[in-house]
Length: 343
Image (cartoon, one colour):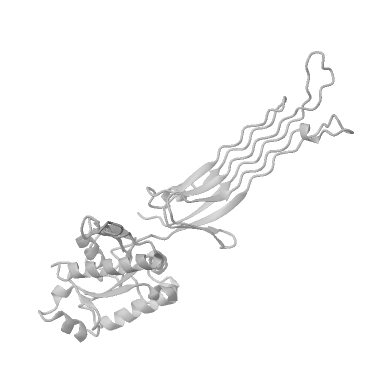
């Protein structure tokens, strides 16, 4: 089960106390102050780990406390620093302050860290307070307090293509046909209650990640159905694949519903590269694909059938082209193999 939200309470470690101590050795009856400093408290870090897929661990263990710093001691010995605590989170985790709702971090890349709570500073020992007029200070600093805060974590899946469609539009069937993912498939709405990812391989070098997301209904931007769970996951997809069912009463109206809900959630989402397909084409009488789509009110759409495989190969090539252009626009497209070779 995909757990994509969690609320956690973090405590960074307080700093250790400085020491009040005086040098005491044979033949040195009035040695000076030699109290050491306290160690710094441990910090709490959130770190992206590519092997973590959900926020399940954070939900089951919502409290994280780092170690406190050790106290200073005589002979100017400093206390040991508290050990930092690293909490692993999946790529695509958004961190918010639970009280204000402010976005504190957007963790995407493996190894990326966010300091959720900084450890307290260690207190200074009395050796720091000796002066020419006050040579025997009998006080030291206490350790600084650690930080305590509530954080809200939200996971937004990172995929190249996101399947956008009404319930029972054939999204899960398509994902199972073009990848090794095996989402639950059944002939009734809302079979998919959580996102599923699958790797689509066109050949050994061309691969992309597709996301089968829960079905969208009118009012999804207001939270109806599984709207909020669905819509936040399409924010990171490079390409949107709008899917409408061939047997629907009004496929063109279904597409308008999808576009409207996506736009109301975030107008910029409709600016993403997109492709429109009419699914379950095997249910239509044999006819020219272009004529079938035009008759359904979707002249620019592509007709496919996940059951028979009709139209899938050209669709995957189209999607790969959109992904490649998106990567090229970002400046992250892989260089051609022949680039830089001698002619």
